[in-house]
Length: 446
Image 1 (cartoon, rainbow, N blue to C red):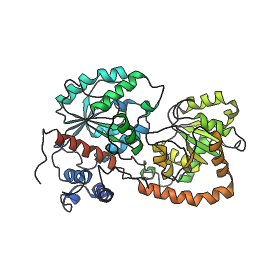
Image 2 (cartoon, rainbow, N blue to C red):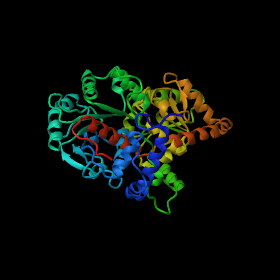
Image 3 (cartoon, one colour):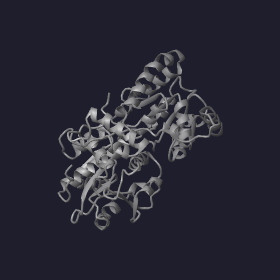
Image 4 (cartoon, helix red, strand yellow):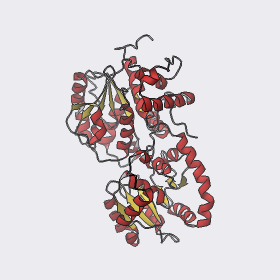
């Protein structure tokens, strides 16, 4: 079993108690917690943070840079939706412990629940502009009297006049692992990471990357997994069934079985490694298998694969879909494939497992952690390795034997995942640690 929360934030016992209180908070509000939850003096920072927030104890003024929220919808956005959803719990944020967001023309609706501070729009991929924004970021942080500045993508405060502590939420260290990454980007990221007094990674793999990159002792960078988006919690018309949603979508999009799903991929030659799937599908025994590509720019990626492997042209389909339709793709695919050579965590793996998919992953950092034994692994450099698994799944007898073993592991993996509110609470707990350490404020005697 993969530990779902770094022990710097919560022990195994504390995690269960934290999640219990958070579930009660979501159901009945903070008053129900404050009445029955005594101050946990010997507990971890995460459990204490629940008590502080439930009792409206003063805390840090946290300023979030929304630089990435101008980007199209993707994995980073899904993680932030979980964070902002946790912060929207009734009275989780209050006047004595507020959170504001630098609004750079945010495309993320949930930011509307925060206090918004107008800030210049930035291209998050323009490294020079990100570095140049430091002075303005510092001015805005000082004007709002921020105690902690939180960024999850390469923005910092001025090193000459930093008005507050800095916290970095690190989704991955992919640029540092990519040989073709530009020196400007690497320099900007290093500046961002070194400026932060604390970091929170979304996986143990990313935490280990950070420890190596920043020469920190092993086990000192905390981490917390994001979890799945629960599409079943969304309102659906009473007369609409999952079967009818799938039938209508499959007919309209011309999705034909058997197919494999490649979610959220990228260009040929990128770390996402989509070419491995194409090379596998042209091997013997897989002529009947189609390839469905979903996510941003799916049509462009499909066209690139068709141009490189013309024999696959009639077997590739790019689709745009809603979360509900994507969940149906997961459930009806022969397999959901993640061939990346490296990932920060691999959230689509978790979402596919949540939807009872058979998941095949490259044997790579981040993906191994996301799959945690519930996903079948293949060598990211060996198309035949992937092809062998697909032939097994196409064989009824072999697939029937394999299914109950994968289902047992899938259920265990989903049970091991943290509450969707835990990542947001972890950031608040780390911000409080920075606030107290700064010496500007002291926690009231309790």
